[in-house]
Amino acid sequence: MYGRSQWMVGESPWALAGVPAALALVGFTYGAAFIGQGIGAEEMYRLRSFVDDCVEAAAQPTVALDAQG
Image (cartoon, rainbow, N blue to C red; front, side, top):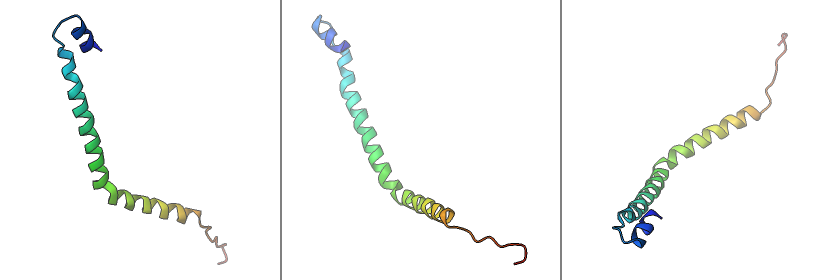
């Protein structure tokens, strides 16, 4: 917006240089997230399996023994 108004009044639109920089930053962030998900996929699977096993074990009824055995 600021770069366009600079352009309209005849000044040097130096603020328009931020548009390619912002697009590059968005692309880098997307790429880093995509790669990070691939790297952490196995660990997330193991964590999910562990949590599922814990929830399943907690949901099973326990056998209570009385004092006489």
